[in-house]
View 1 (cartoon, rainbow, N blue to C red):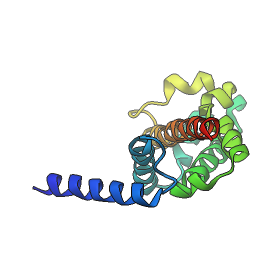
View 2: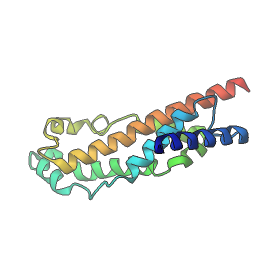
View 3: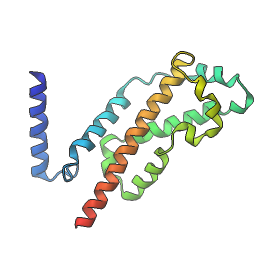
Length: 163
């Protein structure tokens, strides 16, 4: 019963947005963009917990070459979370901001910091659960943002070509 009511609510909202020519509704892409925005909101609202200092220190014991793991990971996760915190307001970003952020979120933590690639096999849910969860959560947000921004860029280019 609730599912049918929810579906009808979404349909009403969609029709209302189409009548208003809401900018979120672009040539049938609305549902995917809204799905991504909803997924982003859900991940952002999930409990991230505290920064995994203890798990990072555990891995840092493996060698001095990992001494900057905490500041590097903190900066990376903070940047990704910061972009994600914009939520629906991302739709108002100018094209150059979308391009800049798309470039920034196109790389995972290990892509951006290849010096930590040797730690990758050690970062498991069993051995360092808090660090594993933090990286997984950051990667989910990054992936959603990458998809969302790519779709926005494509849709804006399509709309611009039609105009």
